[in-house]
Length: 467
Image 1 (cartoon, rainbow, N blue to C red):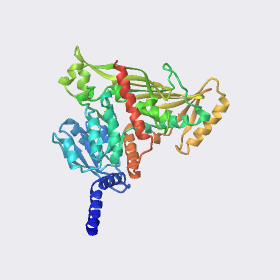
Image 2 (image 1 turned 90 degrees about the vertical axis):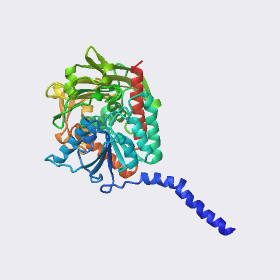
Image 3 (image 1 turned 45 degrees about the horizontal axis):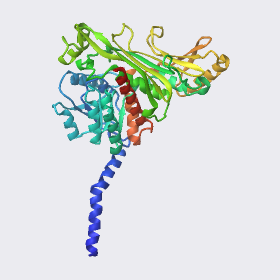
Image 4 (image 1 turned 60 degrees about the vertical axis):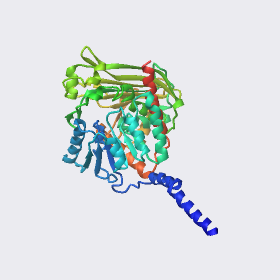
């Protein structure tokens, strides 16, 4: 009887190891599957309908296997992605050496989950099913690096929340590509805002004059890596791409959180939508053809065509409070930038001692520039001393950073060109940061809660704008 009990005990232990115990080990293994070793990160690219998917591969990393598995439908979007990868492989300066394995069946997503040849899925493209894809991918125990936006409707926001919950349970990392955190004037603006002697504290602001404002202007027709960017027709369908208020605004809301409350863990209850609005950019058939190379609007866009003009809800503005601080995020899409210009960004942080303003207009040569202006009641001599000391300290982190005095109470930063790497290079910087998270087995505690708050803000902003 004792021998039977002993064998039953052994059997029970083995059964535990193969069931409950095994599941726990799988989660632990997922959390420690990366060490930073060469080639241990194996990428799978899902339906790369946007050039951002290729930009993740503009730089190679030892940690990433050079073989990338692509799962996508056949068509011009896949070919454009492959052409960009090929251009990186063949460039004269520091060429890459990517190899691709491609599957193009109609069941491309299901095939990816079944074969699972990689451990990190990269997605950038049509957003109609992106939230669903993200949830099912993390459920399969695969890490996800996603281009923004990860959700485009208030109705699907709970699905994204569930994806983050599942990712934690499975021990995998879900992260979005926030390139604008690596733009140098924004980085310096954030640094100076954290120096009380210079900035004081962030004002509360009002709806008319928010404490922090982020505005950006984008263009449907542009050049990428020196070539005209051909947009897929679905890019102009808000049911597939998302409205502007939930698309590019994702970056702006992220920066507001990142700068106004650096490394502070936020929650949905910290957000109060004050007002929101949306409006269209109108495209003629000629504009549409120049951007897409298509002669006519596809059927799914006919719902947005009036008198031959395509009306795209690509513009939006959200006025809201974050932990009681008034903030504004605004995005505008024009068709094409004037020659010699491009996408632009405007930002202001209003402190109790000075305003930190980023402008990128004609006066700045359409290059972002950071200005520092003390408030009228601030002692200028004392302020100047603190400001110069602060910039001197920052120059150890950003060698060559200097101040230029423009007026009695206005300065601008002189930032060395080596820090102005450009939008495309920021994707490599985000990828490097994400690879570091994988090797460490964790992200900063505030990252996931703040991603949830960010998408709550954009989707609730859309809800308010549509009322």
